[in-house]
Length: 310
Image 1 (cartoon, one colour):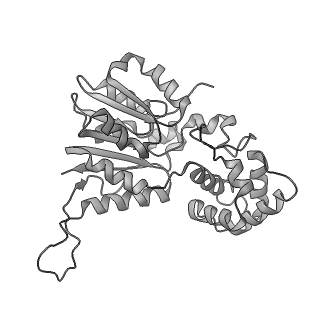
Image 2 (image 1 turned 135 degrees about the vertical axis):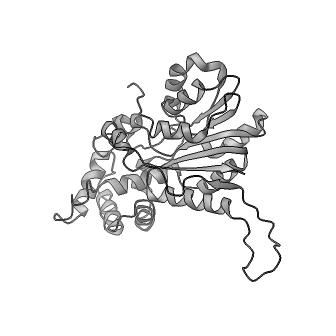
Image 3 (image 1 turned 180 degrees about the horizontal axis):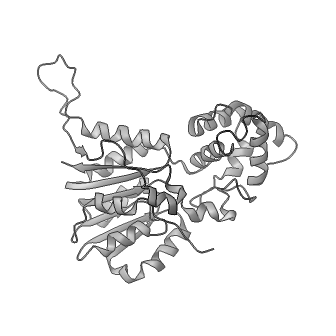
């Protein structure tokens, strides 16, 4: 299957980065290369460091961007490990950072990857297929309490405990092997009158399991802070989120970086040494335009936050 993915809020991201043709940029989530292609088009003597842990994404992007291969350094890894790679490359400061936290259309639409509740396929959901933990293991081996906690924490589903109970009950007689089996269990956990009231009832649970499998939220706040501090003065960091859990983490990270002093208000002299590291450019996150939504409905939940190093 060809790796296809429409980059979300492409123009807003490129404008937000304020690209310097001689600068060094980091695309933490390369995906299909949509954002990266627009960045490298604007580079003259500059460089792009492109990161993704999905081997399929890297292969596809390398082919798409082969005309710019002299401007791009590819890294296969989780972007949360990228600071080590930057150090190894000898890059002291970055001119811009882009993080798109969404799951690519290719991963969702390629049934064999096991991300989608709309197709019956083996439970997988790994963005990096070389890792051992997959959705099948989470669904079949986690305790009822742990499974319920994940569904609530990462999916915010009010029926998390009911769903976890039904999953554990089902697997007493048969291992849950496919997305279709799991989807049916989730659907039947809902009372009939509520089952489709807020869209597909599987959405929250599938999201929760995917986040657990890929450890998507672990240390997200830390890497946002670390990368912001790697920017040159005037450099920008642009982050696209797709659900409230991610967005809250990014928002809090930006707020902390924006604080000038965290000493108690009554203290006459600052002793904390805290200084403002960034200015928040987007006081409210940017969202997709009506035109983009008409072309790409998956952009409907996207929020873009931008900060600038000071």
